[in-house]
Length: 509
Image (cartoon, rainbow, N blue to C red; front, side, top):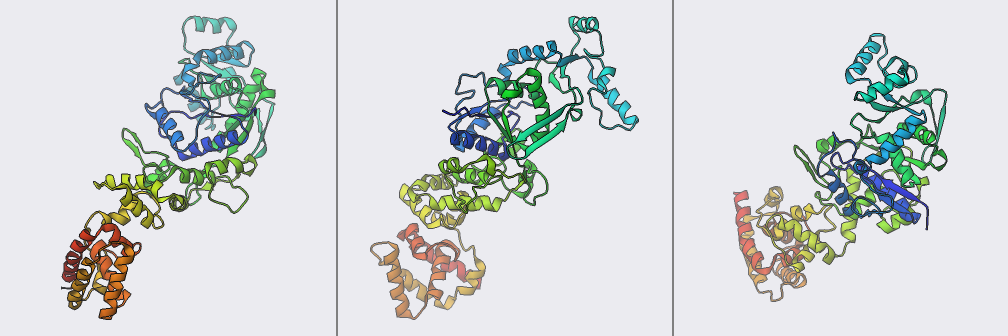
């Protein structure tokens, strides 16, 4: 069994962006490829930003995408608890260890004092005040104060935070699987807060402690965390854990469709496409998800996998099992990946086409049911067969095929004006009478009766089929005309034809 252990560690602060879902997917694929373990850890120490329902949303999104954790809050495991809010005693223990070893210190500066210092720095031309080795001696902390003063403040109940002591002159090298050797100087890292005044750890401390205790072997996360990795390496050094530090792989950003800047939820709202796996209704914030937009989970997963990774072949359609077999961290791109919603729709269409009609029928039934139409399994299967090569998303089955259940009138008026000749109405009434004699209402029999009628009247397909389509479906677009008539049914077809003729007469009047 492999020693590979990876984790997806989202914060429950709202809907899970598809960039986060991609991170989960890559972790999952790597774990499965290496026969390792995929851990779900909820990083909920920032209680001010905690959003009720967000953790449930994360779990539901992973389940929908087929990404199954091996350990996690609802699953258990040997390294729990898996919610950081339930690990506070652990963080306090390790924070105290850093203080006792001289790698961290208490800081008593109030927000007001910090704000005044920032303003003073600005007045002197420094707009980027940093709490670090160059400034900590002027502040109120365990380094600038004597031990007696520090103990007195603590005993007196003065609020404090704990900061990491970052000394200058250190080089920090990170061997990133995606980006190679990345180097930082310790002067670039300030004395970050590790433990907040409320007794909760910051992301940085909890992240490092948890990754160590949970024996995480590889940290696969977004590019935006790369600068923080320098601080994390310093923490590993301070704890004496540098030799067992996980390997890092920082994923490229997901970019806006134009390639300029990071993809945000506002882009989806402004341009009309989903950037979340599921719908989210967080009070005033209502966001559309891929699931509710009519995407199959396999298609979205396939689409996401290619946003930052490629298999090195021409193959584009991969099942989740095939993605596991093909996935390799070495084939992750360094440059950002442009979000192409048209490509996402293409993937979904390929999966719709590849899904057996009977398997697709329940989803088609659900779409029509939302519009008040109940479909039998056979009818849903037939609609799936006729339309799946013409649609990109599930809602389009209804949008393009509502005429199967509704009398929609003439929607393509331009074509109706072009094709309809009122003087031929008696002829088309005769066609209706001919169709009424068809005993077996199947597409081949309907076609045979129509062709026989055309031979008798001298009319061609170009004159007859558009009129049949317009009268029963309102448009000349769609699948085979005789298959449409079969699916609509004999009685309904015969009822629609004269009403369609009436509607076209009015257009020509």
